[in-house]
Each structure stands twice: as C-alpha cells, then as structure tokens.
Length: 131
Length: 131
Image (cartoon, helix red, strand yellow):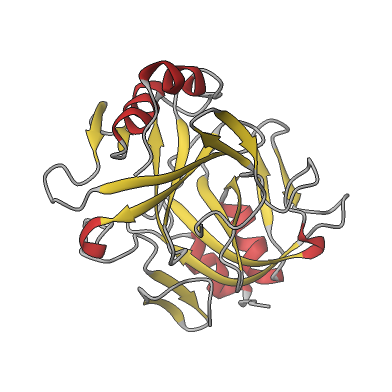
C-alpha cells in the first residue's frame, strides 16, 4: 500500500489541473501486476488527498455530488500501490489491488467488459491488451 | 488492425453516452501486448466512427475544438487493435499499436510518466503496473 503524509499529499494534489466538470481530474484504475484496466472515474482535490493519505482509493461522484470510497458498500475496495500523473496534469493513473476482483458494479472484474467486434458488442472480461 | 463497416461503426457509436464536455466520451489508450497505459483523451461521435472505420485512432480536441488524428503531424499514430466500452457507456478503452513508441508530445512512451513518490514527483516512463 502506498501512503503519503498529509502535507506531501496536499502538495501533490495542488499540482494537478482540475479542468474536468466539478473541478476534477480523470482517474484511470489499472490493476497491479495484471495490467488490466478496471475503470475510469473522477477525482476532485479532496479525493486525491484522501487517496494518497489513506492508501484506499476515493473518487468524486458527479451524479451524487459526493466523495465516495470505492467499495465502501460492496467491499470491493481498491488499495493504492502507485500513482502517476500525465503530462497535462489533468488525468491520473492509479495502480491498485482490486479486492474481490470485482471493480464493476455489474459484478465483472473490469468495467470495460463490452468488446466491439465485427458482428456487434460482446461481453468479454478477459485481459484487454492480450490476444 | 481493427476496421468496421461504416454502418456497423455508426451503430456502435450510437450506443455510447456522450456525457462529457463537448458531447464526448473519455478514451483511454492502452498499448497492445505490453499493457502500458499511454494516454487519456476525448472522443466525440465522429471520432469514434472514424476510428472504427479507418483503424487509425482519431480524438476530439477540446482545446482546439476539432477532430484530430493522433500522430498526424508527429507520425506517432495509433493503430486500433481492439475497442472496449464500459458499463456506463461513457468511457472507451482503445487497445492500440503505438507508432514510434511515443504517445506523449513530450517525447515519452506514455503521457503518464510522472510518478508520485514519498519524496515528490519523479519521471518514470517504465511499465506502470509492474514493480
């Protein structure tokens, strides 16, 4: 688990450009070791700070307008292992350990389980980047 | 390279929820075989259709308000291999072959090359999800 001091977390959070709706950055969660992309969500400054200080991933819900701990009700929490910022500083990449291997509220390992194929959309919950 | 007919591409593009600014979905580009997350960008419906029909990744630039072919000027194009849609249908995951191994305009392989460490932010352009 990765955890920073509150002072350091606030310093890091202050360098981001919260230019998406609700003053957020886009957050991509990728699974530690497997490399599977699990989900995309939003983080405001408070979500970034709480994630970095607790090691447990927090997001901002644009629909509910509130901070939420991923997995707070389902138990499928995400433990932070590494944290990356992109060149524009408006997106972050979270490397996480996904509890229960279910990031998706539909019960799948990844939210990206709809694959576009020549004959339409199919459910496929395997690692995306391999054949 | 993955390519669909215009009819099929339009059908797929019509199922997405373009709820981000400028009527876009968030697009995450992940490298085929390596699993490296390369970048986050936006796609409007036209970008989705052109990507699916040509097999060459197109994005929507929110700053320039125009469609752009990734790598049109730099040569660092992205060839589409696979295309996934998430459960909310407002984000897509593109599995791509990245020409020249430079997705970032700063010359790095990935735009996510700033790693947050206990003592601050460091440049790290290695695979994120491994140690």
